[in-house]
Length: 392
Image 1 (spheres, rainbow, N blue to C red):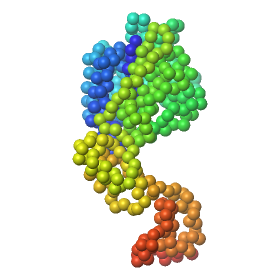
Image 2: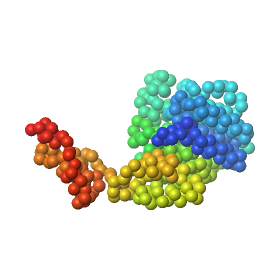
Image 3: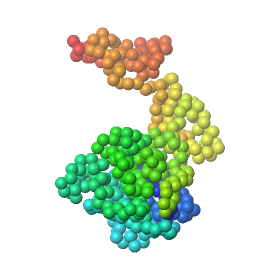
């Protein structure tokens, strides 16, 4: 059986205030084109379909169009809610859609929903396990203690009547770990250290393939058939893998699942741009003249200049309109270190000009130049007598 594994669409997301709706339309169209070529029997969407529990009308319309076109491709579509989704809202109309080949799991009701599909080798049971917190499972567990995500998942999976020799595929949206190995995480998701949120892959032993959602970097966990599909777009600058992929799984009648990655190309990339202000302005002018679409990429700009710059952001946005973040590389400092260096006695004995000079040196790693010293001497810095009087 051929399967496509998707997760973490986050439809309607805004990154640093920028809407990525057009980018999501672009990538969903690309996914549909590849699905028409791959011709899977089932498409799995493993949680965080929306970015918010109450999605915008545009995000809902986008999902409606995507699911409708998926069904037109002749494949079954299986969806579970993630921690960003409202299970009740996502599963609206599920009993009606089921007859069209669209299976959407709602809230956990004591045991996972199972959808059975068939290929030439026999039947495959798809276990739809929505995102679980311990509190969601406790009402069904009676005397069992459910205090961790692992205990919640273990209980839910124990409710399945497994049959020997049968193929099982799990859709789940949890923080999976492989023994002591943690997965790769990114800034666009909640950062976990394990512990109460961790679900070890040893719980997934009965499954021929485990389709994970929750983390945005595509990766396998411990074994090749236990995988995070990752998000179809980059949602943070910590996602340094150059390309996102569409994950195809071929599940044989016996033996191991075979995974194939198909590259996805975003409308605009999300990347870090580093350099001196003048260099970036000159490069931006060249991109504008050449009508190069790369100037519309979503950027974190890291300026390497030594000198203080006046309004660099609006100037750079003339050429790079999608700057999301800007950082001055030479102006990085640890405020706690500065605080430790300047104690109470220093505040009494140090003039405001001297204080500012030390602050400048702590941030830039450089001493004042002669011209800057002259400027400081001409300034009438207020507040020194109040500061000293308060300390005496």
